[in-house]
View 1 (tube, rainbow, N blue to C red):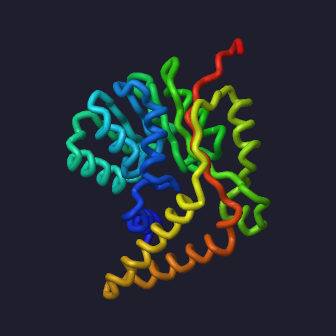
View 2: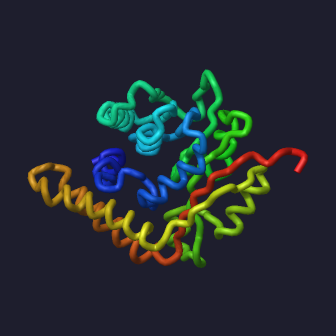
View 3: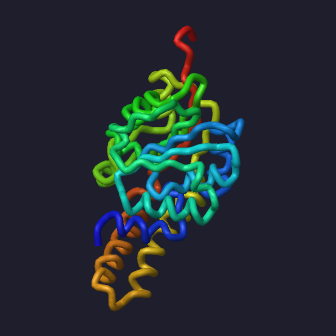
Length: 247
C-alpha cells in the first residue's frame, strides 16, 4: 500500500489533514475571507477540503487548488460536484512551484504542508508570489511545545518553539492578524481518527492483500505518536498580512 492510499484511508473520518476541528477551520476561513467574494488558492490542496468548505459557505467565492496527486484531485472534483460548487473551482495537476496563475489571489493557504516546499519560510515565499495587494495567507505549522527527544526531531523535523516560529514569520515581513493553537483535544482527535480509520479499514477488509500492511502501519504510527511526540508536538495556524515596508 503506497503513501497516497494510506493517507486517503486514514483521513476518511478527518478530511481536514491537520489537527483542527470544524469550528477552528470555520473561524480561520472567516478571518482569511472577510468579504466572501475573494479569490482563494490552496497550494498543495490534496482532496480540496479547505476549498470545498469555503466555497460551500460563500456563494460568491472562486477558488483554485494545485496538487501533484491525480487521485486527490479526482476526489476534490467529486466533492465539488457533490456540494454543487464545481463551477467555481479550478484544479491544477502540477507542482505548486511551477504554478503560474492568470490573476493573484486574496487568500493563499498552505496548512500542514510546509514540508512540500522545504520549510516554513519557503512556503511563505511561494504564497507571496501569488498574493494580491492587501491579501492574506493562511498557514499551518508544527512547533515544539516542550523540548523534544532526538527521536521526535528525526521523525518530525527541526521545528522551533511557538514564540520562535512566530518571530521567524514576523522577521520575514508578515503580521499575524489571527491565530489558533490546536488544543490537546484537536491534536489527539486527529491522531486517533487517522490511525483508527486505517486500522478499521484493515480489519473490515481481511481478504485484501494490503490489509496486513495497513494494520501494521496503523499500529506503528499510533505507537510513534503516543511514545515519541504526543507530549512535545504542537500545531499553530496563522492568518497573515504583509507588513508594509515603511513599518
